Amino acid sequence: MDYHTFELTDSHQSVPMGFTPQNGLVFSQPGQVAICTGISMGWVNVSVQARRHPPSQVDADDWEEVVDHTVAITTGSLRVTSTMDDAPDLPPLTEHGPGTYRLRVHARGRDTDPDGAPEDAVEDYLLVAWPAEAQPDQIHKQTDHYGAELRAAPSVPAPPQPAATAEDAADQRLFERLNRRRNK
Image (cartoon, rainbow, N blue to C red):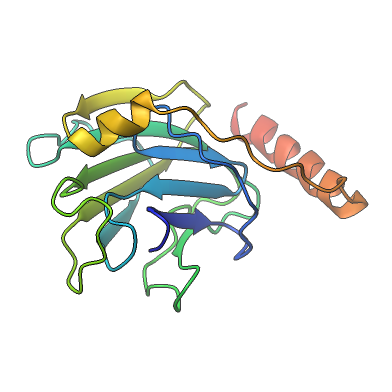
């Protein structure tokens, strides 16, 4: 975890994506997700759950922030990754293949050492994913101060991307075809 975020990618390639945390916790672009942390760098505790269906209830009692966010996955292997160290040994969140997923992000401890670099983990995250149609973010709980600061701050747009390759276009067509089949 570094630069106030940790990432999930489905291709092991991270592309600059700006900084757009309107909900104060999570933002994404196809194949890549950023989770906003309070600490600037260091370790955080992360647990993941891949599901076939959404959880029947929202477990918000033990958490300070809980947000559902839509993620578009092109390869079907969304995993927690690291920009500075080896990736953690966590299972993929998208075991049902490429397509659109809902990602429920739970967070606590982001106000413990904001902007710090503690030696031990002071923040906890639970990530739960399931296949679903694209929907606007759903806020279940927003109570930490760090998230409020992010929601009030202006977004930083992503830098310009190079022109798409023929392979990128083919991947996009495959992604759209798979989504149409799943939604029938």
